[in-house]
Length: 191
Ligand SMILES: [Zn+2]
Image (cartoon, rainbow, N blue to C red; front, side, top):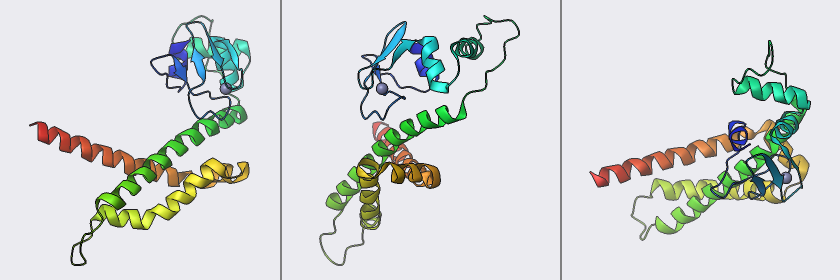
């Protein structure tokens, strides 16, 4: 069960918890046991085959075939990859996206706040730090996004997902870049 959960995109904490893909899960409330899963949030439960069946919107038999195919188990004669139910998969993807989008926007907002405090110019002649400028330029828009992702209507959130998910991806890229720069700096200090 844990292997399948990981394979199909869940991140499992050390205590065996993961964010549930079947409801809008803010913190990990799904417990992944060796042979089954149980969500303390929405009550979803089942074995490994049931999990894959629910995740992709396919029958139990097709789920078993899919697991066999994806893990190279060869349990079925002439097995082929099973087509997944696009609608169900999209729905589950949306919940996962929403959770990640919230985390991304919150983290970026936190950075912006920090920069505005740390890099605040002391006198007028000082060159403005680029991070301070970034904070001035981005904060209100990012606050708007954070608000929308937490308190917006279902429609607003889904629109952002469908039409404008690129925005979130760009923020994620920005954070990745910052993390890379930080890692680079740390390595150099160690040398
Ligand atoms: Zn759940």
